Image (cartoon, rainbow, N blue to C red; front, side, top):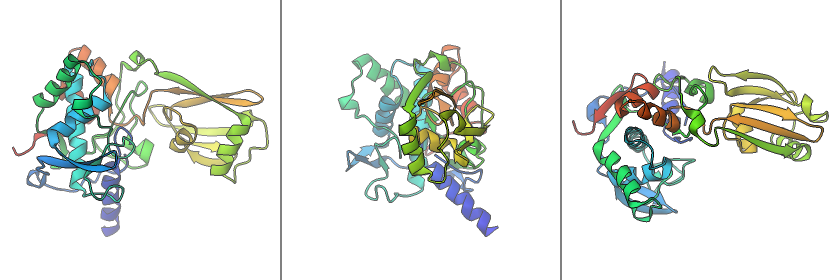
Length: 314
């Protein structure tokens, strides 16, 4: 039992190290009651490497400004604001990480979330006002599971379904399941392609996986892919070596793990669908739902099933 609890705790902590990618772990969110929720009025954020103290709501505004187009429907912006606030509180509740021991959060989307100072926003005044209004409309609202802030990860756009945490990171999380996610094709980069020469592929893949046999033609290198229910590559045989889809994505800079491969005698082309890890809130899915009449509570309930909308200090 102690071992199970240990791995469960690791899972939650890993999830809170990700978002907009950026997470990973299990159904075992620590059992905490609402009184244990962080009640932070301010957060310390590492901005360009400098610890900076900000009001929580100002930080959330900066994340929303950086992470989602400001001209999205108000309900989509509200949903993003709640997700960003929740993710921040999830990380805050776990303590400061080794990556930035002098700050609770950072402005690196690969570790925490992107951040843009509202004062330095590139948005027109009306668009920045829309972001600020979405944050103010949801002030203090977060998503919880068993009384604790959830790892409210989000991404740009999934395929027709979002990915589950289990399929992407190997651990089941009740509120990060695969759900239907329409509207993705509205994103200009919904389908994309990356082409690499055979020589470059051998260099990168051979360096990462020296046991892979890449001596034959490119059309023999990929075999036996295993896909998730949402379409992402979970594992694939690369030169006889089993490789995770997330590793292939990172190695070749792909937009998602939902990819197919075509080859010529001297090149390989990855064809991808979606952008991001595909888990949790799809921003373009939220846009579609808002345009079709859903409010932010309905959007959040759809993408984080079973979570509860909670107000801090209530």
